[in-house]
Amino acid sequence: MSTLEILHLNKKFGAINVSNDICISIADNECHAVIGPNGAGKTTLIHQISGMLKPDSGAIKLSGQDITNMGVPQRVQAGLGRTFQITSVLPSFSVLENLAIAAQSKSGSSMRFFANAARESTLNSAASNALERVGLEDRADVIAAELSHGERRLLELGIALAGKPQFLLLDEPMAGLGRVESAALVSLLLELRRSMPMLLVEHDMNAIFKLADVVSVLVDGKIVVSGSPEAVRADPAARAAYLGEGSQ
Amino acid sequence: MDRSLILGLLIFLTLLAMPFALPLIGQGYLTGLIIKAMLLAIAAISLDLLIGHGGLVSLGHAAFVALGAYAAAIALQSGIENILVLLLITLALTGFVALITGSLALRTTGVYFLMITLAFGQMAYFTLTSLAAYGGDDGLTLWSLATLFGSNVVQKGNGLYFIVLGTLLASWWFVNRMSQSRFGRVLRAARDNPERTEVMGYSVTRYRLVAYVIAAMIAGVSGLLVMQHAEFVSPALAAWQRSGDLIVVVVLGGLATRNGAILGAFFLVIVEELLGSFIHEWRLIYGPLLVFMVLFAKGGLSDLLTSKRRGNQVA
Image 1 (cartoon, rainbow over the protein chains, first blue to last red):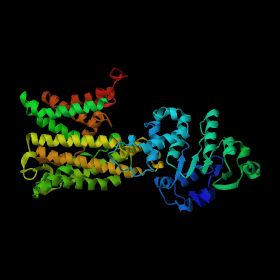
Image 2: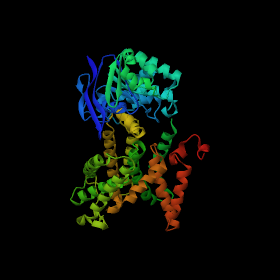
Image 3: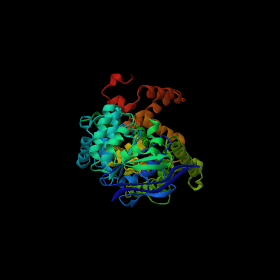
């Protein structure tokens, strides 16, 4: 059964077709990568999946549930987790509190006004759990604004995980990372992808070939090729559109 | 124990002792001034919930003080005297108005939110001036005040003083408690990074609206007590300058700090009284004083009093 299903998605900005009949189906525990040159419509696609943009037509289903008309928070509640291309955390919160509040949204009502949230053991243990998964144990009490760029990336992934998603949307997770950090993140994602389906938008071809089961090449809003990494690498259309150009 | 909590307890113990201590040194009349400062502090605490914790700078908050005062005054005129019933009426009206105006205002943020709350505040001001039956421009002098089940203990002197002090304590406790709660955490997260907070699964506007309604209701309660203290209500309570004063109090005291709003309110009232007794144009001195404070005490008065690195404050 597929976890995320994108059916005939269309989106136009004026006369430009940014999403042109996009269909993607991602099975359980599958990692699907979307690549394409700048301006191909990757970010628009991400925005439509996460709920920041509404498609003109088409549908998006998460675990069988139609989420096309849901807002951003509702989609997260329905099981969608995501990371941002430009790292986005709560800068004045500690690392642990960033994770605890992410866990909080899936653990009962947040319209509670009296009890001290920092003392809720269920939230704190969920946070510690996510902390361990991304390997930031020794940074728990550091204010997020003081983390290095690489650590913030990990925290962001931790925030997504603490929300117990059924599906992960990763928007260029490798962006801005050094070689060592990048390799560490790839091995972390390799670990994760055994238990969680994900859609990965990425420029780093090494990472994609290590992680992805299926690669789709997006050009001018249209998926031109879709298949295994090896097949896509060999495909002349894909090479012409993207790989051959050596862009980024 | 943390320093700000000690400071808070000191403040409340001092306030508790004042009605007994001041008459001993022949300064009993000062309790009226303290009541004024406490009433300002209650409104400021509620505004800090929006500005400090929520990052929502409202320039119309005084309108809720005025609405609370008018709701109580009008109910009083029509024969409802019990202060607890008046309290319910005030809470209901300010809460309802905040729900409507908040759901519109919170579609915006930043300077637009400031503009739209200013607009709602001005609407409240002009609506009140148009209430000819209740004094219009001139306001309304009250010939009878609220009672507690027929007793006049809540009208004057120490009775009123302790009601106001109790309300201040309750608002202070409630807002501080709330800032540590699940709700307060989401509100702070939305201030920090609203986009991320939405992607954590929280509908930011919903939380902000609840905060807006709660803040308005607390401000309304201060309005009820303002009426009881001044025995008079007027549209000037809703003037945007009053909202400006409240912002000054909150910023000066220290945003999102435990005691900032109280310190700021007392600072404003004391400075106004002291300077005002020397010079009529006291704001000429008050202005530069504010500039100085904002430049050199960035964390506000609260930080000045509780920070462990006091020597480094200026740097």
